[in-house]
Length: 85
Image (cartoon, rainbow, N blue to C red; front, side):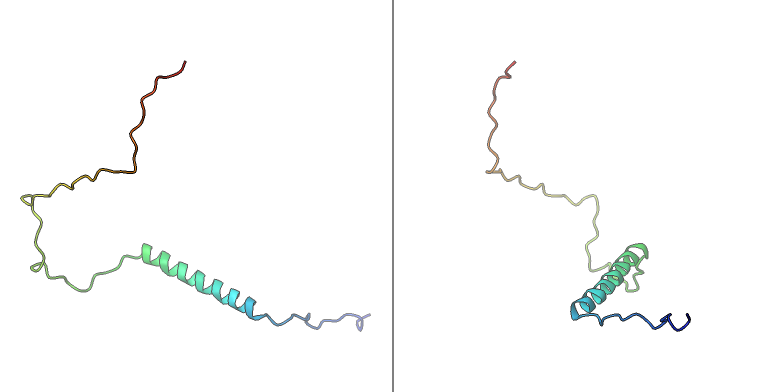
C-alpha cells in the first residue's frame, strides 16, 4: 500500500515569456503604487533654502489686472419659446 503513493512533486510547466512579463510587470506596478502612496503620505522636507530677495514680495498694493472676457462663438443664443400646457 505504501508503494502505491507517489509523493513526488507535480509536474509544473515552465512559465512562458508572456507569463514572466506579466508577473514582473505586476510587481513593478505594485511597487510604483506603493511609492506613489508613500509620496502622498510622507511629507517632503525642503532642505534647500530659496532666496526670498530675488522674488518680489506680494502685498496688498499690487493691483491685479482683470482678465478680459472672450466672447464664446460656439454658444448660440437660446430661443425663447412659450411653454406648452
